Length: 354
Image 1: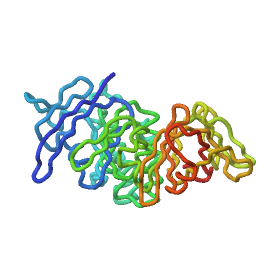
Image 2 (image 1 turned 90 degrees about the horizontal axis):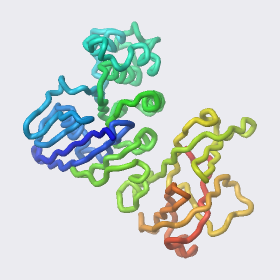
Image 3 (image 1 turned 180 degrees about the vertical axis):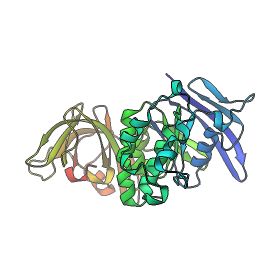
Image 4 (image 1 turned 135 degrees about the vertical axis):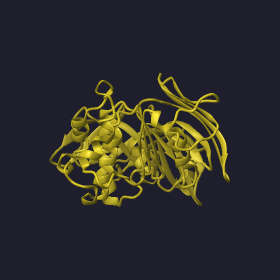
């Protein structure tokens, strides 16, 4: 498997960084952590914008070790900053073509018209940056980075400067790029909903130290990691659309033996669809309810329990090869006598599935 392998251990001013990781050169890897945890510093080291002792190998090519340091302009990467940073005197077309024209035609791995189509930039092509909304500027910045034909794409909180509506508008474009491209993406964020929606792999950073690296799904649901103990703790399930009920406006999705109904008509039958279920929206019963408004009743088994906020317990559940989190009161856990191995029914309101 092709990998991005990095090792940096350094003190930068008052900040210490200890990062040693290996992730696939395919899919989206999220660098997640609180502000000041070292996410952007690590991304800038990978880009060569900052320098510290270490080693970096991208798909077998050494970009940094004890003997060499490849400068940023010679690293085949694209970088999208928090601010779009477009050239203000150039049109959208000229901004997009800035890096593309500098790539020899035989080395162009991405075509201009493809990127314009993916990001729906055609209506903007003659405009100047000052005529664009924040979300439009960021789409152009992403397009410009892609048209430099990089082997690695880096994004440093690309939606941090956008309002909620603009973020909601741009996320589908990032999802489309994820589906269409094999290009690896390292994505910095402190917004868990973004990470849960986009990422395949997770690098969890706390105070300059990597505390987890691996699949996103596992990192979200491990009770020994901090993500499960946040108020927005959630599980993501990569499912497939099975069918629609147009009359009731429902979509049925499935993963293995798990079947879920969610409101709205999403995707086409056979299409992949990622769903997100927050721990606070999962309740538990010891037997299958006979009459209930809850549509998603999932047989499960308790794997482990852990204390959470005062009076609350997190329950990690196995549903075949899928893990689900439930946050319940300590009193409920005692009344149900929950312990590892207990069979339960996980109840998930359809309207709570994102």
